[in-house]
Image 1 (cartoon, helix red, strand yellow):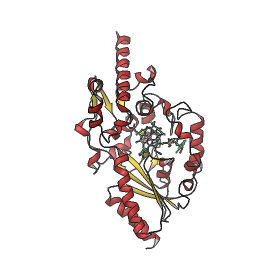
Image 2 (spheres, rainbow, N blue to C red; image 1 turned 120 degrees about the horizontal axis):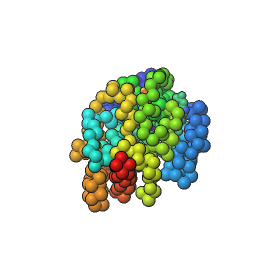
Image 3 (cartoon, rainbow, N blue to C red; image 1 turned 60 degrees about the horizontal axis):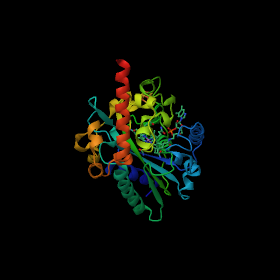
Image 4 (cartoon, rainbow, N blue to C red; image 1 turned 30 degrees about the vertical axis):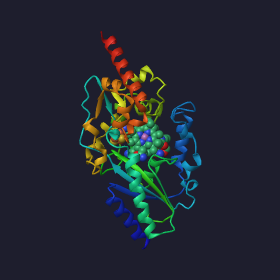
Length: 324
Ligand code: B12
Ligand code: SF4
């Protein structure tokens, strides 16, 4: 096969596996992206050494250059897995909203088998080729690679947006020793819009494209340890989010171009997009484990979900007292 034929083969196989978009970038060191990443760390936006994401400050050599992971890497294949399902949040006052990405099966369960299948197809073309797969599973700046591979542009809320499907998609990565024809970045279509910055309930977007994770609802409701209390100021601005947060993407005009996913695994379990605080409090461990098996919600554990629900309820109570 010629390099051009190999390239169209990857595109075709990725589409057959249900990925909406695929792009390929050359595996060279990241430059400006890595400098900006270091600035982000230096500002403590990952939560610093005592925070829940200290791991972000490790393996910097790999984040800068994927060849520190796979020395033979020539290319970075990036795929977008749409997870949009045609449901919405209609929470009652005594319910907490679950973010869209967590309604169905965990993407860490869904994407890797497809990436492995794609790697097997590549190995049929070149049996000596080496590959490594990732989907939020290693020290790789996935969004930077998605931009380089032309999947979309980085929105001011820092998620990647594609003109074709908006931003409700996960990223998957294959590092490979094979060579392809490379894609190029597309232009930034945020232009003068600031809808996500204006809507962000906790001012986590400190300036366009820069998110301070320690002010992000997603960080507090998913990443922090159960025994850490959510600060009152944050809990008061959490707008009923009990697990993750979609506010910045809900308001984005590019998400009017969303297309329902063909992946059944992302359909909301029990058609649930919110959970009542009472239900969360009453869950027994065994029931929680069975109900949320292979769901992103298992990350926060039952105690974490209960901590989030209590913080929201206490914030509601404080608001009521302030009004009266
Ligand atoms: C850490 C992390 C988080 C943290 C920090 C978020 C963040 N913005 O970094 C927390 C827990 C808060 C989080 C939340 C979410 N996450 Co997350 N997260 C990650 C993870 C593991 C690393 C991201 C990272 O490296 N951040 C570090 C910062 C520095 O990176 P950055 O934001 O891209 O920063 C760049 C910009 O600031 C840019 N920049 C700076 N100045 C300027 C100026 C200009 C002009 C420009 C253009 C750029 C620019 O330079 C920086 C470096 O490149 C990735 C998986 C991975 N390995 O990549 C998933 C990932 C980013 N998360 C993902 C998702 C889905 C989410 C949530 C939507 C989940 C939810 N519903 O709650 C939210 C979105 C919140 C948000 N607005 O960011 C997806 C995003 C998919 C997409 N379409 O983009 C990823 C890629 C996982 C995956 N494989 O699909 N996440
Ligand atoms: S809401 Fe507006 S500024 Fe924010 S990411 Fe979407 S288009 Fe860009």
